[in-house]
Length: 213
Length: 213
DNA sequence: ACCTGAACACCGTTCAAGT
DNA sequence: ACCTGAACACCGTTCAAGT
Image (cartoon, rainbow over the protein chains, first blue to last red):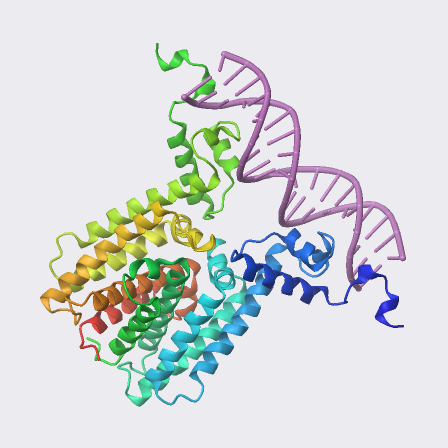
């Protein structure tokens, strides 16, 4: 009994994935993270409430899309750090990969970070866990630079390490948002915005290499 | 002919302000920036389409609320910088005031910054102008520190100054969002989150005082 | 000029029903 | 088990109408 024997309403048998794909396509095409559940269903070729068989509600679908995005982001950042023994180079590469991901997928990035924020700051445990995983890549690089003596961070002092990781994360997150929103372009009079982003990253990282008072 | 002579449907005569106040109250009470226009009207005690006499659409009302917020934010940051001759102290105070505003008014902050982002990065000219005004406070402080020699920033090199201003803005914006979202609290194991925020700011500012490679 | 009430096209979600 | 169609309560926006 092949799948052809099922009525066409049973579709491809993996509606969950089809819905996630449709949502991703909408994000990429419209640049807006706030699509309607009914449109996702329309795109997947099912009725407007078929999604409820696979996701508890719209929020659950948005979360699933965001979680998938965190996986992709982590792949980019860890690939960027891969094989770079120099902590300065590694940290710079991670930052560029992070910002590059946000700029390449603005709607997805805003869905991942901006929407948890929009909902009173209570991100789901799964999203919090995914975000923590992403921070771990930066954490390892900072620790590596601290141990090698390239960064003036006390590897034995958790507060110092955490402050540095949060600083790096905040800077890059803010920089990504500003870039997506066009603030960077508005600020830059001449020369490509990429130079400014690189300058900002370099200035921050150089700051890490000098003694902290 | 006093206002009492008008039918009560004419209300207080300043529905525009009443709607903005109602929107502000909803932001403060719910912690959500995405309220409905109809609820704002309900709160102001008018029919659900009375707002259209004062705002072109929901977007226009949201923008008006955001613009008012930028005015308040600028008041806080410039007050924080006021009278501080030392650029390091001034920059630190500005950063704390900025983050303090965001934490005290999370929904308003997200409306101001998160929503322009959500709408495909095209903030209104008025909002862009208001945001530019806010950057100016930081710009002056950085320039001041560059001229006094406290910051290793070349006051004659616009690219260097801009990179520093954007770095400071990105860091503080990201830090505010992370704090609102609870990421900071999740990262901190022991001790108040405020310490971490202060540590991050200090680390960044100290980094500014050392020579750039 | 300023506001109301009915109306339209959408949305998220639920429920009974089909195969 | 998986999907559909009708239904409900909402929403943003428009339009004719009231004072």
